[in-house]
Structures are given as structure tokens and as C-alpha cells.
Image (cartoon, one colour):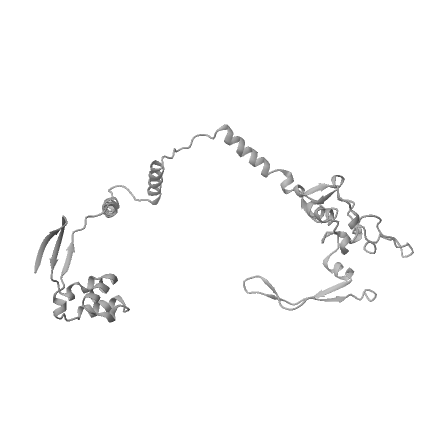
Length: 286
């Protein structure tokens, strides 16, 4: 039975279609609605395939015969028309052309050209303005300033610091009294008969002419910096005889030898396996 009616200016088609004919094309939402109308409550939590199978094998009763199928005419929206037109255009472009080879590069160039035309981008671009060139040159000069990568030693901690983070010792306004300590330094002796003397005044590296801002921030609070030479890290000037030693000579000269167990990881790294142990070197026997 097929009947065509008009309701509110819209065209509808009413017909009585068996469930086994439409069960295989139902969506999950539609299957739930059909199951609700035909009193199939147990299908709500089933999968879509089980719902379709149950609806297809359902035998309608008297209450089911009162149900009909309603079809409504739906106009194609703009996106569907554009998608169909695009598919037709792609099919037309995919046809092989006689005497021409299809390469990926010309297609990419055509796509980019369409993008520039669509977004009103000028190609080739116009030359940069004077203001833009001045900005580029100024930024390059600032980034390549020697103060950005040159390093110098800090007189307080002895570490290498970038010049931009250093200040001359003559420009320091805070006091260096926290760096004055006893029992930390010792002046070099030429023989065993020479008296033992310490450095007078603040413990700093006299060869360095700058100090880093981190150490100055501690000195302004009258606190000794953690990495300062006066905090038990003073070694003194290295003699010329000890400045260029081989690995074996360093082992013989060192007063302490370390022992540690390291495991080589499969991917190429190193991993600590045990604790590091320090042993005193028997210098008189050596």
C-alpha cells in the first residue's frame, strides 16, 4: 500500500514496508525507534548487528500492523552539492592526457598557486621596507653581540660566565667581608722550611677582573655564595709542572683514588650500578 499526502506544504509518502526489507539499512538510532514501536525492549543494549537480526526475524502482531513507514523528501544541502561537484571535477582531472605525463610537482605548484590567489597573497612579494630592514639588521646585531657568547671567569666562584652576566670588580658596591676566612687557603712554598702562610683579605681569584651577578646577590645579603672559592673550594694556582700531565701521571699524583661500578646499557648509555668508593693513595710507597 502506497499513499502520497501533503502536510504543511511538505510532501510525504506513507507506505507499509515489511521490516525484513529495511532492517539491513537501519542505523542505531533508527533501530532503537523501531524496537520501541514494536515492543522489543530487550534490544536497547544490544549491538547494531543483533538489533538488525532481531528486527528482521520479528513477526508483527495486531499492534504492529497499525505502524506505517513515512518518507519525507529532503533537498540536497550546499555541502553535498559541493562534494558531488568536486568528485566530478576530480574524475575529469584524473583522466590521462595524450602526450603529457602526470608529475606530482606541477600539481603541487598549481595547488599553491590557487592558495595564493584565494588568500590574495602577492607573489613574488614586494621588497622589504626601510623600517623592516632596520629591524632585521638591529636584531641580528643584538643576537651576534660578543657579550652574548663571550665568557670570562668570576673572581668569587672561579666559574666561566657570559660577559653579559658579569660586572667589573671596581664597580661592585657591596662589601667582600663574607669572603674573608681563615684555614681555607695556603700560599705555595718552595721548600719544607718555608713558613705556612694564608691569603690575606677576601679569597678571590686575583687573575679575574669580573664577578657574576649570582655571587653579588649573595654578597649584598652578607652571605657567602655556595660556589665561592672561600667556601672550601679554593685550590690555588696550578704549578707549571702539574698543568700538563697524562692520565697515568694524574693517577700517581692524586692523593685519593676512586672506585665505581658502571653498567653499559644496551642503547649506548651508561648507568650507575654501585656506590662510588674513595681510597687514599699510599703516597710514601709510590
